[in-house]
Length: 287
Image (tube, rainbow, N blue to C red; front, side):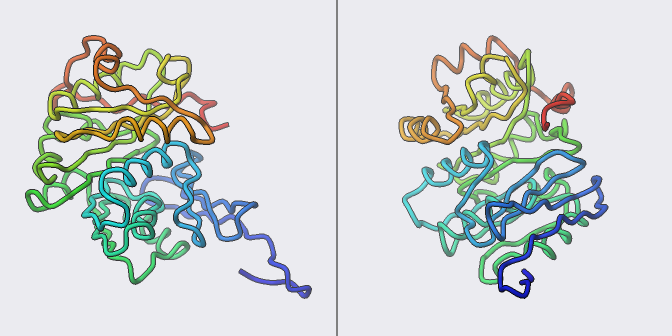
C-alpha cells in the first residue's frame, strides 16, 4: 500500500471489474489496512483480511469457520472441497489454521477467479487449487471418498442455482465425502422459509445427523438471512457449536434433533425434477 510523505498509509481505493457474473467490486475495510469486502452486483459475498486470514467478519462465515474448527482436532490437516469461490475466504482460513490441508475450489466465474487472484493473491505455499467449472460438474470429477469436508457456498445473482439444491446433488456430495465426512452449506432464505425447510428435508434424506445455525430472527421467519446447515453420518459437535454460535458478535442459535425436525414442518426433499433456485433477497437486504 502506498505511503504519503509523512510515512502513514494512504487510503486504499475501491476497485471494480466486469466479470462473467456481473460487476465485481473490492471495497477496502477502513479499520483493517489490508482487508477487503467483495461485492457482486452490489451484494456482499466475502470479506478477506490478508494480514489475518483467521479473521472472519461476516456472521455466516464465522459459523462456517466454527464448523471447520470442530470437525477434526486442532491443526489436523483436512481435505476440503469448496463449491463456490468468492474471495477464497474459507480456504485461506483453513490454510492458516490447519497447515498442510489440501483444498480444491470450484468456481464457475473464471473472470472473478482472475480478479481475486490478482487483487487478493493466495499464499503460494498453501495447497489450494482453483478450478473454473460449474460446481456440480466440478464435484462430479472428484474421486470417491476423497474429502473430509465439502463446503457449498454458491450464489449466482444472490441466489443458489436450482441444480445445487437437490437430492441428486447431495448423492454426489456423499460420494466424494469420506464415510465420516461432513457437508456444510450456506443457505439464504426469508419468510415463509420454504426454501430452507426444503433444504433441511433434502439433507435429512441423505445424512443421519443435521444441525442448523442461524440468527434467531431468521429462524422465526422475521427477516431474510443466512443459515448454515451441517450434515454428516457421524456424531456432530452440537454442544460446542451451540456455545460458539451463541458467543458470536451477532449471536445465533443452533437447532438439531427433534427441534430441527419440527422446524422442517413436513417439507419434502427436493429433486432435480422440481428444484428451484433459492429466493431472491429483498431490495433492502444489503442496505
